[in-house]
Length: 222
Image (tube, rainbow, N blue to C red; front, side):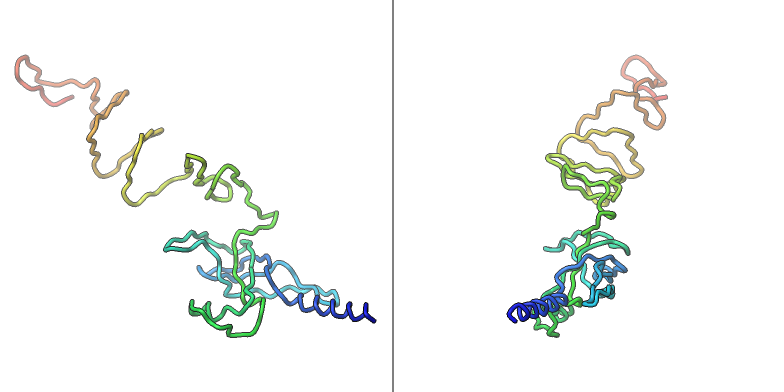
C-alpha cells in the first residue's frame, strides 16, 4: 500500500513536471529586429508514448548585449539556432510597458514567456573556425575578422571608416596608398628612398630650363 501510494505521488509529480518549461533549444523561423518566431527542437512525449512537436513560439524577445546606451547585434536569420529560456511568471505586462507589473496571467514556466538566446548550437551547426587565442568577432568562415589578443588587435577585411582618425605612434604601410580627395599636410620631414614623381615629373632626376650662373632662378622642372 505504501509503495503504491508513493508511486502514485511520484507519477503525479512527474506529470506536473512535464508541463513545466525551463529552457529548450529552438530554431529561428523569422526575426523582426526585436522578437523571433521560433520552433522548439525537442518534441513532447505523451503518457501513451506518442511523440508530438511543440507549436512555434511567437513574440519571443531576442537577447543582445545592450546597456548604458550601447549595444552589440547580429543579423538573426531563419534557420539560426539558439536557446529559449522561460520566465517563471507571465511577462506580458512588463513586455508591453517596460515597467514593473503584476502577472497578467497566473501561468508559470509557460511556453508563452520565453526569451531567445542566439548562438546555442548543435554539433552540425557549431562555429566552424573557432579562434582559441583571443576574442574574435568574425564571419563563420573566418575570412573577415577582428581579433583581440594580448597586446595586439588583428583586422582582416576591407575597412570603410567615416570620421576623423588620430594616430599615436608609428605607422607602417605595406602596399599602395591612394588619396582620391583632400589635402595632405605634414609638420615634419617626409623622407622617401625611391623615385618620387609629382604630376609625372621625377623629383630625383628632373632637370630645369633656363639655368644661369649668378643670382638668377631656374625655370620650371621638366
